[in-house]
Image 1 (cartoon, each protein chain N blue to C red):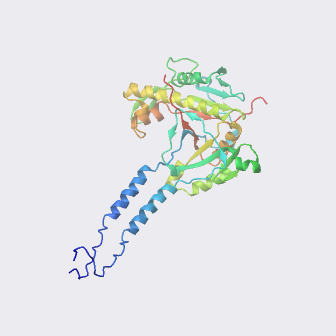
Image 2: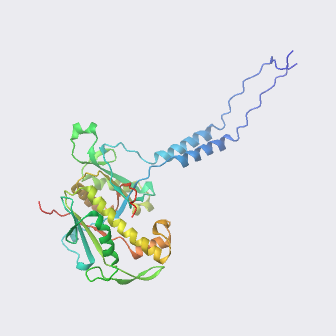
Length: 196
Length: 158
């Protein structure tokens, strides 16, 4: 009895590939690639010939924000607190009351949307001293971004009834607001040496 | 005799290794995914500022990094405590940025090159002088898309 040579059947391995794929997908999903976050800016192109030329911009169209070496913020010649900057910037960018000392409004055609009236030629010039603290500079950049984002948000709510922040990144409405109605125009000016 | 008594010459079955390639491949893929994000050894220490309006950088492959901050304690004895720039794995001067950007751009796909971004991880307490120097160098190197790296701060309730 039981003398015959019995063989143990080989394990069915056809599902191991599936298991390994599940593992692979699991790791792919769960591995957190520590994504970098930050404020995106675009530098002006370098033009060696344009060093001396001052670009002529009407005074009403420019808002100079200077952060000096004592980390004080001067906006259009007045010392302000960082908490005031956002509202000043918002008023400057949008010019809601058509003031004569704020940027002129013009008709501007947003492709795919239509014609809007906005301040097309405004420019925020951000200047710093070599001894300015980077953190203050960053906070100023952040407040300016906040001004833009709030304006875009208000515009989106008014036009489309949705919040700017809730729109997908490639949504047309977001692009209209970001690059049509209120494009970011922050000039990262050449550094200057103030009072040494 | 018992039914369960074994008295035949039973052979131990060989381990089936046919799925080994699959396993290896999955491990390989996993490591390929993870190591595509180059981890550099940081030789400077920095705390990036906090902001409310920050955006996520979606495509990692487009981003190059510049670190600016104080050297870490083990390097201070050698090069002092002044603010330094780190490119790749080593300390560098502002002049080296041009080559660094060119090299980073060279390693990219042709269609990715226009979208190259440079993320600057700068310590809070850095002075703007060195930052503007780096920015000017980036302009000359035609790396115009920059990111001021920062971490998220909770928005204040208005």
